[in-house]
Image (cartoon, rainbow, N blue to C red; front, top):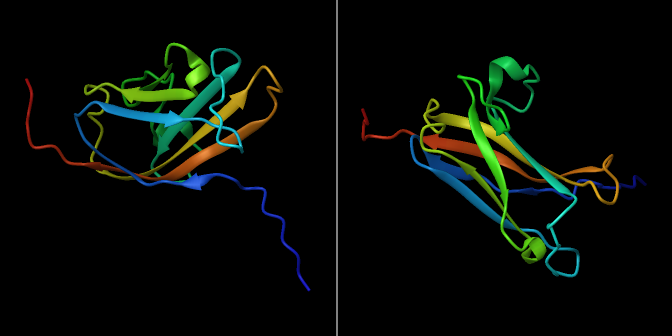
Length: 139
């Protein structure tokens, strides 16, 4: 009889957004009891959007990422809402940085509690990241 131990606790959430529109994703981080985690210090979050989950060459297929500001990449900012005891974290990308090609991509979001153990990285969300074409052209 085969046994299985699944250590993957991440959740799949597919995202649909629009090219050239401001992107904002607000998450509520809570513990296993549903209590908001105090994010006021010691937490870091990363979000990557890539062409495919099997692509590992950052320079050619990373579409958007936290802290990446090269001409071909969008820059997703991570903001901890004031009073981080609320457990809220916001990922934003400006309308200018959302000027990437419309299409279907993949993403994930990872969290690290640097105050407890900076070596433990946990993927909390993953899925497809669909960017729909925009009609309005700005000068």
